Length: 355
Image 1 (cartoon, helix red, strand yellow):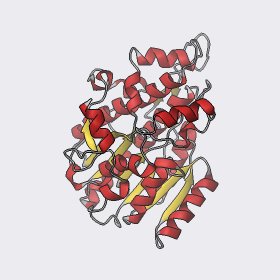
Image 2 (cartoon, one colour; image 1 turned 180 degrees about the vertical axis):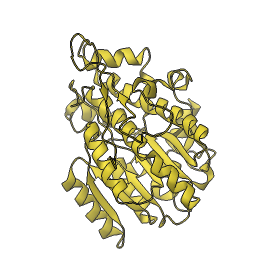
Image 3 (cartoon, one colour; image 1 turned 45 degrees about the vertical axis):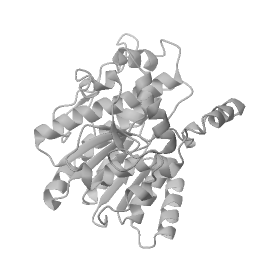
Image 4 (cartoon, helix red, strand yellow; image 1 turned 30 degrees about the vertical axis):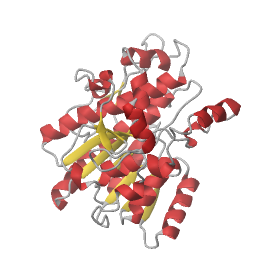
Protein backbone atom coordinates (compact mmCIF):
# COMPACT_ATOMS: atom_id res chain seq x y z
CA UNK A 1 0.00 0.00 0.00
CA UNK A 2 2.82 2.37 0.95
CA UNK A 3 4.63 1.67 -2.34
CA UNK A 4 1.43 2.42 -4.26
CA UNK A 5 1.05 5.77 -2.52
CA UNK A 6 4.70 6.61 -3.24
CA UNK A 7 4.15 5.77 -6.90
CA UNK A 8 0.99 7.86 -7.21
CA UNK A 9 2.53 10.94 -5.64
CA UNK A 10 5.86 10.47 -7.42
CA UNK A 11 7.91 10.34 -4.24
CA UNK A 12 11.64 10.37 -4.99
CA UNK A 13 13.74 7.33 -4.18
CA UNK A 14 17.44 7.02 -3.37
CA UNK A 15 18.36 8.36 -6.81
CA UNK A 16 16.50 11.59 -6.18
CA UNK A 17 13.93 10.71 -8.83
CA UNK A 18 10.62 8.87 -8.86
CA UNK A 19 7.66 7.81 -10.97
CA UNK A 20 6.78 11.38 -11.97
CA UNK A 21 10.30 12.34 -13.09
CA UNK A 22 10.75 12.97 -16.81
CA UNK A 23 13.55 12.03 -19.17
CA UNK A 24 14.61 15.67 -19.45
CA UNK A 25 14.71 16.06 -15.67
CA UNK A 26 16.86 12.99 -15.03
CA UNK A 27 19.41 14.06 -17.66
CA UNK A 28 19.48 17.73 -16.73
CA UNK A 29 22.75 17.47 -14.82
CA UNK A 30 24.53 14.76 -16.85
CA UNK A 31 27.80 15.63 -18.59
CA UNK A 32 27.63 16.79 -22.19
CA UNK A 33 26.96 13.82 -24.49
CA UNK A 34 28.50 15.24 -27.66
CA UNK A 35 31.20 12.56 -27.60
CA UNK A 36 28.63 9.76 -27.25
CA UNK A 37 27.28 7.52 -30.01
CA UNK A 38 24.02 5.76 -29.15
CA UNK A 39 22.02 3.08 -30.95
CA UNK A 40 18.33 3.06 -30.01
CA UNK A 41 15.88 0.50 -31.37
CA UNK A 42 12.19 1.34 -31.59
CA UNK A 43 12.82 5.07 -31.69
CA UNK A 44 10.11 6.07 -34.15
CA UNK A 45 7.39 6.48 -31.53
CA UNK A 46 6.54 6.42 -27.85
CA UNK A 47 9.21 5.80 -25.25
CA UNK A 48 11.89 5.16 -27.85
CA UNK A 49 11.26 8.47 -29.58
CA UNK A 50 11.40 10.41 -26.33
CA UNK A 51 14.60 8.61 -25.37
CA UNK A 52 16.17 9.55 -28.71
CA UNK A 53 14.90 13.12 -28.49
CA UNK A 54 16.34 13.70 -25.03
CA UNK A 55 19.70 12.12 -25.86
CA UNK A 56 19.89 14.35 -28.94
CA UNK A 57 19.05 17.33 -26.74
CA UNK A 58 22.08 16.42 -24.62
CA UNK A 59 24.28 16.19 -27.73
CA UNK A 60 24.55 12.47 -28.50
CA UNK A 61 24.99 11.15 -32.03
CA UNK A 62 22.03 8.84 -32.73
CA UNK A 63 21.87 5.66 -34.79
CA UNK A 64 18.24 4.71 -35.37
CA UNK A 65 17.63 1.26 -36.87
CA UNK A 66 13.98 0.78 -37.80
CA UNK A 67 11.62 -1.49 -39.68
CA UNK A 68 9.72 1.48 -41.09
CA UNK A 69 12.32 3.65 -42.80
CA UNK A 70 9.85 6.45 -43.56
CA UNK A 71 8.91 6.69 -39.89
CA UNK A 72 12.59 6.73 -38.96
CA UNK A 73 13.28 9.50 -41.48
CA UNK A 74 10.39 11.47 -39.99
CA UNK A 75 11.90 10.94 -36.55
CA UNK A 76 15.23 12.25 -37.77
CA UNK A 77 13.56 15.31 -39.28
CA UNK A 78 11.65 16.08 -36.08
CA UNK A 79 14.75 15.75 -33.91
CA UNK A 80 16.96 17.80 -36.23
CA UNK A 81 14.27 20.46 -36.48
CA UNK A 82 14.04 20.76 -32.70
CA UNK A 83 17.79 20.49 -32.15
CA UNK A 84 19.63 21.88 -35.20
CA UNK A 85 23.03 20.32 -35.68
CA UNK A 86 21.99 16.93 -34.33
CA UNK A 87 23.62 13.96 -36.02
CA UNK A 88 21.04 11.25 -36.65
CA UNK A 89 21.65 8.25 -38.91
CA UNK A 90 18.87 5.91 -40.04
CA UNK A 91 19.21 2.26 -41.07
CA UNK A 92 16.78 -0.56 -41.89
CA UNK A 93 16.30 -3.27 -39.27
CA UNK A 94 13.71 -5.99 -38.78
CA UNK A 95 14.40 -7.35 -35.31
CA UNK A 96 12.45 -10.55 -35.86
CA UNK A 97 14.89 -11.52 -38.63
CA UNK A 98 18.35 -12.74 -37.64
CA UNK A 99 19.56 -11.97 -41.15
CA UNK A 100 18.35 -8.38 -40.91
CA UNK A 101 19.99 -7.94 -37.50
CA UNK A 102 23.27 -9.26 -38.86
CA UNK A 103 23.04 -6.97 -41.89
CA UNK A 104 22.44 -3.90 -39.74
CA UNK A 105 25.34 -4.79 -37.44
CA UNK A 106 27.60 -5.16 -40.48
CA UNK A 107 26.57 -1.77 -41.85
CA UNK A 108 27.12 -0.06 -38.53
CA UNK A 109 30.52 -1.66 -37.97
CA UNK A 110 31.58 -0.64 -41.47
CA UNK A 111 31.10 3.00 -40.42
CA UNK A 112 33.99 2.55 -37.98
CA UNK A 113 32.15 4.62 -35.37
CA UNK A 114 32.53 4.18 -31.61
CA UNK A 115 29.57 2.81 -29.65
CA UNK A 116 28.97 4.05 -26.13
CA UNK A 117 25.26 3.32 -25.65
CA UNK A 118 23.07 0.49 -26.89
CA UNK A 119 19.43 0.90 -25.89
CA UNK A 120 17.37 -2.17 -26.75
CA UNK A 121 13.99 -0.48 -26.58
CA UNK A 122 11.83 -1.87 -29.39
CA UNK A 123 8.95 -4.10 -28.36
CA UNK A 124 6.14 -6.07 -29.94
CA UNK A 125 2.91 -7.43 -28.46
CA UNK A 126 1.49 -9.97 -30.91
CA UNK A 127 -2.21 -10.63 -30.43
CA UNK A 128 -2.16 -13.54 -32.87
CA UNK A 129 0.21 -16.49 -33.01
CA UNK A 130 2.99 -16.05 -35.51
CA UNK A 131 6.43 -17.45 -36.22
CA UNK A 132 9.43 -15.51 -37.49
CA UNK A 133 11.30 -16.40 -40.68
CA UNK A 134 13.82 -18.15 -38.41
CA UNK A 135 11.15 -20.38 -36.90
CA UNK A 136 10.73 -18.69 -33.51
CA UNK A 137 7.51 -17.36 -31.92
CA UNK A 138 7.21 -13.78 -33.15
CA UNK A 139 7.04 -11.87 -29.85
CA UNK A 140 10.05 -13.73 -28.47
CA UNK A 141 11.93 -13.35 -31.75
CA UNK A 142 11.41 -9.58 -31.77
CA UNK A 143 11.65 -8.63 -28.12
CA UNK A 144 14.44 -10.97 -27.05
CA UNK A 145 16.17 -12.91 -29.81
CA UNK A 146 16.74 -9.96 -32.15
CA UNK A 147 18.08 -7.77 -29.35
CA UNK A 148 20.20 -10.62 -28.04
CA UNK A 149 21.91 -11.10 -31.40
CA UNK A 150 22.27 -7.35 -31.95
CA UNK A 151 24.00 -6.99 -28.59
CA UNK A 152 26.34 -9.92 -29.19
CA UNK A 153 27.37 -8.64 -32.62
CA UNK A 154 28.08 -5.14 -31.30
CA UNK A 155 29.63 -6.13 -27.99
CA UNK A 156 33.21 -6.18 -29.19
CA UNK A 157 32.87 -2.66 -30.58
CA UNK A 158 31.53 -1.45 -27.23
CA UNK A 159 34.42 -3.07 -25.38
CA UNK A 160 36.88 -1.44 -27.80
CA UNK A 161 35.18 1.95 -27.47
CA UNK A 162 35.36 1.90 -23.68
CA UNK A 163 39.02 0.91 -23.75
CA UNK A 164 39.97 3.54 -26.36
CA UNK A 165 38.05 6.45 -24.84
CA UNK A 166 38.20 5.68 -21.14
CA UNK A 167 34.43 6.18 -21.10
CA UNK A 168 32.34 3.32 -19.75
CA UNK A 169 29.93 1.89 -22.34
CA UNK A 170 26.39 0.97 -21.32
CA UNK A 171 23.71 -1.40 -22.55
CA UNK A 172 20.12 -0.80 -21.48
CA UNK A 173 17.54 -3.54 -22.05
CA UNK A 174 13.96 -2.31 -21.81
CA UNK A 175 11.97 -5.03 -20.06
CA UNK A 176 8.64 -4.71 -18.25
CA UNK A 177 7.15 -5.41 -14.86
CA UNK A 178 4.93 -7.85 -16.74
CA UNK A 179 7.91 -10.24 -16.79
CA UNK A 180 6.76 -11.25 -13.32
CA UNK A 181 3.49 -12.58 -14.72
CA UNK A 182 5.31 -15.60 -16.13
CA UNK A 183 6.23 -18.57 -13.98
CA UNK A 184 7.16 -22.14 -14.74
CA UNK A 185 9.48 -23.77 -17.25
CA UNK A 186 9.88 -21.06 -19.85
CA UNK A 187 11.94 -23.07 -22.34
CA UNK A 188 9.20 -25.68 -22.55
CA UNK A 189 6.58 -22.96 -22.91
CA UNK A 190 8.53 -21.33 -25.73
CA UNK A 191 8.71 -24.68 -27.49
CA UNK A 192 4.95 -25.21 -27.18
CA UNK A 193 3.88 -21.76 -28.36
CA UNK A 194 6.39 -21.75 -31.19
CA UNK A 195 4.93 -25.00 -32.51
CA UNK A 196 1.38 -23.84 -31.72
CA UNK A 197 0.80 -26.84 -29.47
CA UNK A 198 -1.17 -24.90 -26.86
CA UNK A 199 -3.64 -22.00 -27.10
CA UNK A 200 -1.74 -18.79 -27.72
CA UNK A 201 -1.82 -16.35 -24.81
CA UNK A 202 -0.45 -12.98 -26.00
CA UNK A 203 0.19 -11.69 -22.48
CA UNK A 204 2.12 -14.80 -21.44
CA UNK A 205 4.16 -14.67 -24.64
CA UNK A 206 4.98 -11.02 -23.99
CA UNK A 207 5.82 -11.73 -20.33
CA UNK A 208 8.12 -14.55 -21.40
CA UNK A 209 10.02 -12.31 -23.81
CA UNK A 210 10.49 -9.67 -21.12
CA UNK A 211 11.60 -12.29 -18.59
CA UNK A 212 14.25 -13.38 -21.08
CA UNK A 213 15.44 -9.75 -21.28
CA UNK A 214 16.01 -9.70 -17.51
CA UNK A 215 17.72 -13.09 -17.45
CA UNK A 216 20.00 -12.12 -20.33
CA UNK A 217 20.91 -8.89 -18.57
CA UNK A 218 22.08 -10.83 -15.54
CA UNK A 219 23.98 -13.41 -17.59
CA UNK A 220 25.69 -10.78 -19.73
CA UNK A 221 26.66 -8.72 -16.67
CA UNK A 222 28.51 -11.72 -15.27
CA UNK A 223 30.19 -12.38 -18.60
CA UNK A 224 31.34 -8.77 -18.93
CA UNK A 225 32.74 -8.91 -15.40
CA UNK A 226 34.71 -12.04 -16.27
CA UNK A 227 35.99 -10.30 -19.41
CA UNK A 228 37.01 -7.30 -17.27
CA UNK A 229 35.27 -5.14 -19.86
CA UNK A 230 34.37 -1.56 -19.00
CA UNK A 231 30.82 -2.13 -20.21
CA UNK A 232 27.72 -2.36 -18.04
CA UNK A 233 24.31 -3.80 -18.80
CA UNK A 234 21.10 -3.14 -16.90
CA UNK A 235 17.40 -3.56 -17.60
CA UNK A 236 14.48 -1.26 -16.90
CA UNK A 237 10.74 -1.29 -16.39
CA UNK A 238 9.51 1.97 -17.96
CA UNK A 239 6.13 1.86 -16.27
CA UNK A 240 2.63 1.53 -17.65
CA UNK A 241 1.93 3.91 -20.50
CA UNK A 242 -0.36 3.76 -23.48
CA UNK A 243 1.99 3.66 -26.45
CA UNK A 244 1.77 2.35 -30.00
CA UNK A 245 2.63 -1.08 -28.58
CA UNK A 246 -1.15 -1.53 -28.25
CA UNK A 247 -1.85 -0.40 -31.81
CA UNK A 248 -3.03 -3.88 -32.84
CA UNK A 249 -5.89 -3.79 -30.36
CA UNK A 250 -8.20 -0.80 -30.10
CA UNK A 251 -11.81 -0.47 -29.07
CA UNK A 252 -14.20 0.22 -26.23
CA UNK A 253 -12.82 -2.37 -23.80
CA UNK A 254 -9.25 -1.20 -24.28
CA UNK A 255 -10.29 2.43 -23.89
CA UNK A 256 -12.24 1.66 -20.70
CA UNK A 257 -9.34 -0.28 -19.21
CA UNK A 258 -6.94 2.58 -19.80
CA UNK A 259 -9.47 5.06 -18.40
CA UNK A 260 -9.71 3.18 -15.09
CA UNK A 261 -5.94 2.72 -14.98
CA UNK A 262 -5.25 6.33 -15.89
CA UNK A 263 -4.07 7.25 -12.40
CA UNK A 264 -1.33 4.65 -12.72
CA UNK A 265 -0.35 5.47 -16.29
CA UNK A 266 2.76 7.48 -17.02
CA UNK A 267 3.19 10.10 -19.68
CA UNK A 268 5.71 9.19 -22.35
CA UNK A 269 8.34 11.63 -20.96
CA UNK A 270 7.90 9.97 -17.55
CA UNK A 271 8.08 6.48 -19.05
CA UNK A 272 11.35 7.31 -20.85
CA UNK A 273 12.93 8.63 -17.65
CA UNK A 274 14.23 5.33 -16.28
CA UNK A 275 15.88 4.39 -19.58
CA UNK A 276 17.59 7.79 -19.81
CA UNK A 277 18.60 7.69 -16.16
CA UNK A 278 20.22 4.26 -16.44
CA UNK A 279 21.88 5.22 -19.74
CA UNK A 280 23.42 8.48 -18.54
CA UNK A 281 23.59 8.86 -14.76
CA UNK A 282 27.16 9.31 -13.48
CA UNK A 283 25.97 7.75 -10.23
CA UNK A 284 25.52 4.39 -11.95
CA UNK A 285 29.13 4.03 -13.06
CA UNK A 286 30.09 0.38 -12.62
CA UNK A 287 26.55 -0.71 -11.75
CA UNK A 288 25.65 -3.76 -13.82
CA UNK A 289 23.18 -6.64 -13.90
CA UNK A 290 20.47 -4.67 -12.10
CA UNK A 291 16.77 -4.07 -12.67
CA UNK A 292 15.41 -0.51 -12.42
CA UNK A 293 11.93 0.97 -12.12
CA UNK A 294 10.96 4.61 -11.54
CA UNK A 295 14.66 5.59 -11.82
CA UNK A 296 15.63 3.46 -8.84
CA UNK A 297 16.96 -0.05 -8.41
CA UNK A 298 14.12 -2.53 -7.89
CA UNK A 299 13.63 -6.26 -7.45
CA UNK A 300 12.65 -8.40 -10.44
CA UNK A 301 10.46 -11.49 -10.06
CA UNK A 302 11.69 -14.57 -8.14
CA UNK A 303 12.17 -16.45 -11.42
CA UNK A 304 14.17 -13.56 -12.88
CA UNK A 305 16.28 -13.50 -9.71
CA UNK A 306 17.18 -17.19 -9.84
CA UNK A 307 20.89 -17.45 -10.75
CA UNK A 308 20.25 -20.88 -12.28
CA UNK A 309 17.87 -19.32 -14.77
CA UNK A 310 20.14 -16.41 -15.66
CA UNK A 311 22.24 -18.50 -18.04
CA UNK A 312 19.23 -20.06 -19.75
CA UNK A 313 18.62 -17.56 -22.58
CA UNK A 314 22.25 -17.69 -23.69
CA UNK A 315 22.65 -21.45 -23.27
CA UNK A 316 19.42 -22.04 -25.15
CA UNK A 317 20.99 -20.32 -28.14
CA UNK A 318 24.42 -21.91 -27.84
CA UNK A 319 26.29 -18.74 -26.93
CA UNK A 320 29.88 -18.97 -25.85
CA UNK A 321 31.48 -16.74 -23.27
CA UNK A 322 32.46 -13.66 -25.24
CA UNK A 323 31.11 -11.84 -28.29
CA UNK A 324 30.35 -13.66 -31.52
CA UNK A 325 33.24 -12.92 -33.86
CA UNK A 326 33.56 -15.45 -36.66
CA UNK A 327 31.55 -17.65 -38.97
CA UNK A 328 32.93 -20.63 -37.04
CA UNK A 329 31.12 -19.49 -33.91
CA UNK A 330 27.62 -20.93 -34.46
CA UNK A 331 24.41 -19.81 -32.85
CA UNK A 332 22.34 -22.91 -32.13
CA UNK A 333 18.65 -22.25 -32.54
CA UNK A 334 15.85 -23.79 -30.55
CA UNK A 335 13.41 -24.90 -33.24
CA UNK A 336 10.98 -27.43 -31.76
CA UNK A 337 10.23 -31.08 -32.47
CA UNK A 338 12.67 -32.62 -34.93
CA UNK A 339 10.04 -35.03 -36.25
CA UNK A 340 7.77 -32.17 -37.26
CA UNK A 341 10.40 -29.80 -38.60
CA UNK A 342 13.36 -31.01 -40.63
CA UNK A 343 15.22 -27.86 -39.59
CA UNK A 344 14.72 -28.52 -35.87
CA UNK A 345 17.73 -28.21 -33.60
CA UNK A 346 19.67 -26.99 -36.62
CA UNK A 347 22.78 -24.90 -36.23
CA UNK A 348 22.75 -21.52 -37.90
CA UNK A 349 26.07 -19.99 -38.86
CA UNK A 350 25.53 -16.28 -38.64
CA UNK A 351 26.69 -13.90 -41.33
CA UNK A 352 29.18 -11.94 -39.24
CA UNK A 353 30.40 -8.52 -40.35
CA UNK A 354 33.71 -8.55 -42.18
CA UNK A 355 33.45 -12.16 -43.42
